[in-house]
Length: 470
Image (cartoon, rainbow, N blue to C red; front, side, top):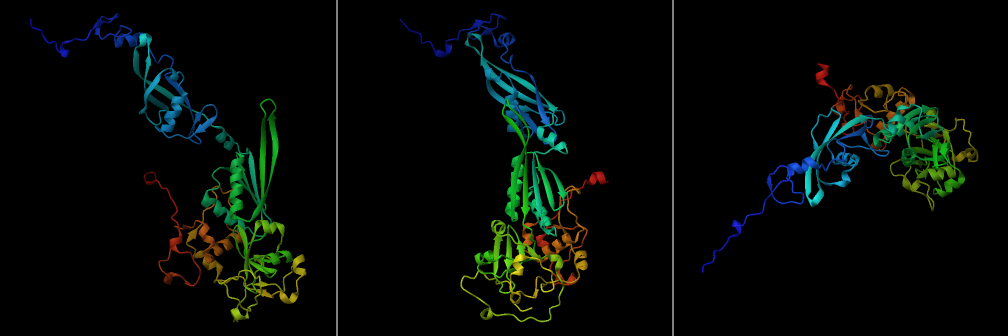
């Protein structure tokens, strides 16, 4: 007897007929083909095909329910996540793939192609592809709505300085512009002796307070006022106010220190010159070239005022000087640091003829007070320097919030920028396209006159539409 070997390929798979259309199919729990199964069962029945998406045109953010606004770029991962969260009933199926379908950017529609599968009756698994259409509706967010209201604010920062000149505020303005500390500001209002900054949240106001206290010697006070409250949900609506007081001392001022403070500063002379103002006051003794720093905490603990301000400066012609060598200088144990950048000489403030009303100055011995204090050097005619100035500074955008640029204090501030390289390191200086920049020193009227080099200037951004101009 012979046996016949049956190959595995010869064994045919069992086939059945579809119970709806009679098509030959492989057996499955529903006994229906794919076409008939899709016509009877829709796994996307509970998923909406059109969804509304709210977009704020002011800040270009999308609403993430219930009350969060998030920035998302077109066809980004963040926008895809936000759109999937808006779909209801997506948790009843398993998501396989999701992607954007290209639409016109101005069509106000976003289309997403989704691939899902789910188990239907009898244990069969059905996969389906469909497109969800998102309609973009414009809706103003709360922050933009508050910014549109001119008088609305929730936090206020008041900056004040009781000084005769505004050079400190010009310096503060440039620091704010360089570090972009005014990005979250709703409005800026200049008033007498200072500025007011308005904010929508207390966190933004607190950030501005921390910035100002970092760059200038000052102190602040905090207060809040209850506007309304809900006793049922325990919600309180406050308005916060921060009052910042900058020390009333400016650069090139003469101060008279209290006796206790001079002892803490290494026995420095009571009559000192303020040669720089940063986050602390930098003082120098004109009789011994001793230098020291007074921070805001020390100043408010031992307050003192300026006995002569920069407006009382008198121009002198120095005919001759007699430098004092190191061996002839007065020194004593415990003396503070002595400046090596300044030359001590017997040579401006006319202190003798000045009308000084200060209690600490009245207690001093008149023989120890210098008659004249040399402050800085005068370089040529000021009007010529201003005409030859080939650089400029940026200011706050709105003219109503900007400082007066025609004031004499502003021109003196520009002169100090040219004379002090350390001061202009913290400020952005831009080229003036309306002025011609000299190539070498021979083109300048006076090469010895202090000036800002081309390497220290930045190119100002100018956006011009050539096609529209034509």
